[in-house]
Amino acid sequence: MQNITINTDRFPKLHYRKTGNGPAVVLVHGFPEDGSLWEHIYPALAGRYTVLIPDIPGSGESLLSDETVTIEELAASVEAVLSNENISEAVMVGHSMGGYITLAFAERHKAWLKGISLVHSTATADTDEKKKTRQKAIELIRKGGKEPFVKGMVPNLFSDSFKELHQDIIEKQVERGMKLEDSSMIAFYNAMINRPDRTSILKNASIPVQWIIGKEDSVVPVNSALQQARMARVNFVSLYSHCGHMSMLEQPEKLANDLKDFISYCFYR
Picture 1 (tube, helix red, strand yellow):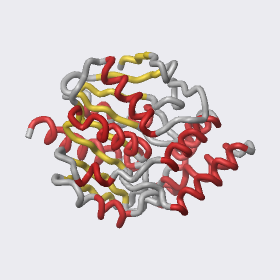
Picture 2 (cartoon, helix red, strand yellow):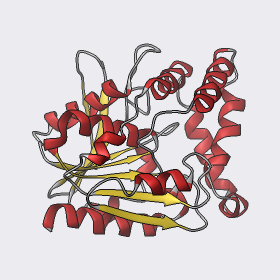
Picture 3 (spheres, helix red, strand yellow):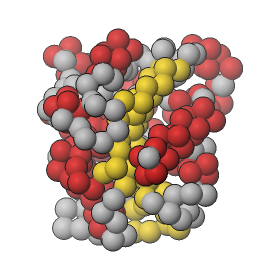
Picture 4 (cartoon, one colour):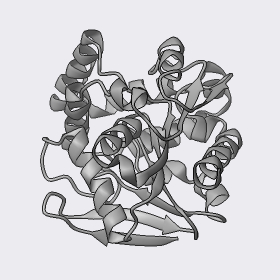
């Protein structure tokens, strides 16, 4: 595993991990995570693919200098990683907010993509209710309430059965979430609030789209995800029982196998 750091005009420090050989696969984490989220997934892919795992600016070792960023700018940070590697063809896998970033990238650089995988994500914009919930979280964080916010949010990303059996993993994710700067959390939530609906990307997609859906996902409703999973011309849909929003931790072996099947189809069909 190589750890690589670059800089751009917008982002003074952009860190990513690189491992494996072959066609490129980009794993884009969600909130409140960093690239280490994929630690149980990338080994299964690295034997056949070059796997790139960015820390989205404001996460991990990548810096975000202020509270203002857009999903489109975060997508541009992924573009910078691919450009640094001289790669113009990849499959992009996005978890949650990483899926929003993936769709924004697809809007701008669809010719670069051989396929996109949306892992517990959605192409729709936030509802008014969701925007209000995020605004309340921003207000809480501004008042110094990051710790109760993270401790309240993270466990709800997992299925009830997983929470009962794996409290140690939940606690580890809380610790990771607490490492995010307050300003980064606020920036990410504002970016999510302001992102547009991108279901048109699915409807016009000429590439395969994969959907990983948890039956107990409290963030992305199952019915909404299933409706979107019919929009593209070619859809791979996997519905996970006893799983919430975090299959890479709840059911990593199943997710790795589903990703391998999908990525192989994208590159070798």
